[in-house]
Image (cartoon, rainbow, N blue to C red; front, side, top):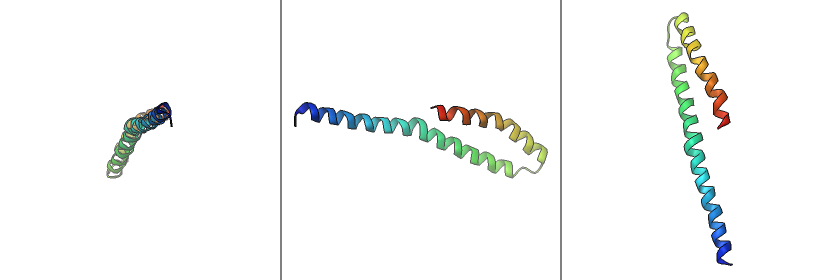
Length: 75
């Protein structure tokens, strides 16, 4: 095999590894952190005693949830 073909194959492999790392770092990890934070929010909401307080908290969080659900798929 010529050195150019070996170099080209290695370059493709390195680019693939770097792109996988970037996707993991900038897409998967933030998504998992957002999902984890919403589980904590849901747990806190389930422990609230009053319906008025629960409704107010859900109303406050719904705008953020909608924004995240619209913007996250665009990344």
